[in-house]
Image (cartoon, rainbow, N blue to C red; front, side):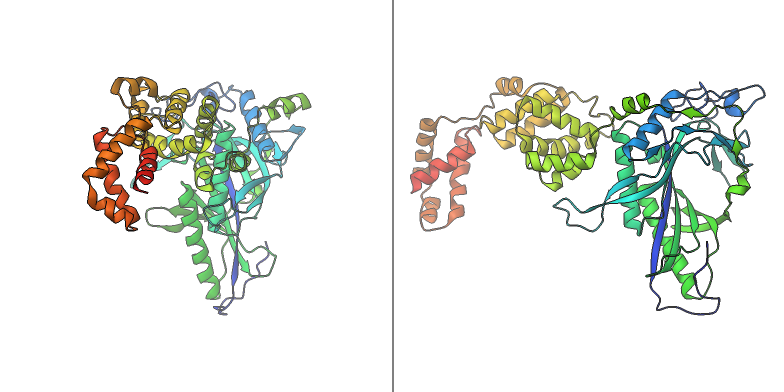
Length: 496
């Protein structure tokens, strides 16, 4: 890339710079076995227990393509509106490093499986109570490759675990079409959300299922030629990507303002110290000595297969959010919590089939349900909790019909979450059904009005809040079972 920055020694403190970012995201595909081997993989196994002769590159061991990995890679391409190649081939990418036992990685070079496309993001900085403005971040390609092992560096030595070697990876490469750390954050969030929705990956960055490298450059504002890029590695969380980019932008800007040049290099992000350090000078494609893998045939994707995979695509979470707002009248504050979580949205829709009260159900799901799941510290999930959509719908129905108070609803929800019992069963057992007998409540309200003359006088003299001093004794008299709305109505009628 051509350098457009000033010569060394010239100071340009007043120049404004534009940030240009491209992200390379590696995503572990959700398959039982590895990309070219029948060896299984799961997170957390004892080191070096999930390997075989293919992974270790032993003589005579030949790779065999994982069909499910191909299907899920194509699914990702269709999800992001990519052009799916009719034929894609496999290439050997050579490099010598302890995490790569064969000294080459099987990848795709000049014929990737998916080309172009885009990732839709919600633009940062909009008001948080309405749907924000969206835009499309352009993709360059999505291709398949095998993962390598994991190195753990100590003070005096380094340890390698080959369990991860050979795992099916998607490499999703954006164009240099991201212009701030906030947009990078939004891009990764959207990418992760869509991949989990489509069941392509579990998308857990803490488990290394999504790993990101950022290519960052600066250029004078108003120009179009890209500056010299720096690749930033070891970005292990979405917030880490944002922090790393912000540090690197500040570092490059300082160099340029002091008349220096940016070196094309790879740098490692240190999340604890919040700095980047030089790792190595950036390799070029020639350094990897790509050539077609002689042990693997090209893959042809026919239209029938494409149609089959296309039929499996889920509704986009952004389109779901728009639908929930227009069809159910749910606010952005609710849909922005509900829709990014595919399992949560499904639970909401299943509950809605049993009783149509979308706003009341959505509030319980996004507030009370998520609170109880969080407080279980991972012991309960949406899949393992006893609470069912049918029982939650029953609880909402009792509340909406005025048969139980909102306070009782809160208490019952917690018990139902842990026990799995129905609202009807608990209400009958504990005698919690609300008293809505108008004649009986009128008699009680008259009794309370006669017993509490001071708040009665205050209310009649215009002090609106004085009515609450009467509601409390009514609720006490009925042991908390009186319908609050009906009590309010009766008191106001009697006091008038």
